[in-house]
Length: 166
Image (cartoon, rainbow, N blue to C red; front, top):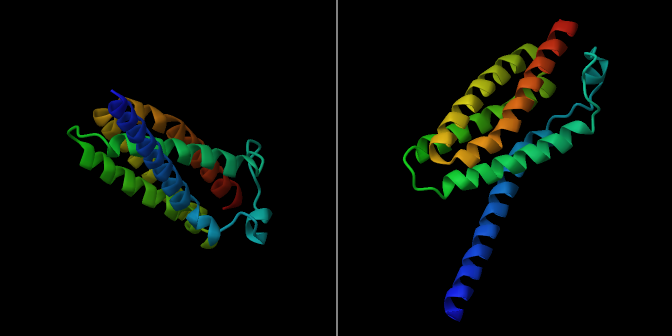
């Protein structure tokens, strides 16, 4: 009996370490573009901002929370053996690539219209990922909903920044 309890505790500890690893991985990948690109540039500061532009501190806080949810969702799908898992993981990787590319397109290339195209593709990929995750693990799909909401807001913000400064 004690052996089962110990094995269960070790398994739980191993699962916790794995989910933490997924969360850290997604946060590192998501934050990587900020090493090379930043809203702290003369170009970005000079842009006219829409009235609903959030305070600067909101962005790192929101993205860290969202990437944490994405890491948990990814872990839930990764550990599943249900049909559709490979497609869901592939869509996740693809949407994450578009997420990462948006930052340098907007801030380094100073190309809000290009970034708008990227974020619209990203939005579609997120919808596809939510659907694919739902087929594998409904909890994982639910964890992506705040991300979809934020990217929807970010797309509107991107559009307005382009429109106001075109």
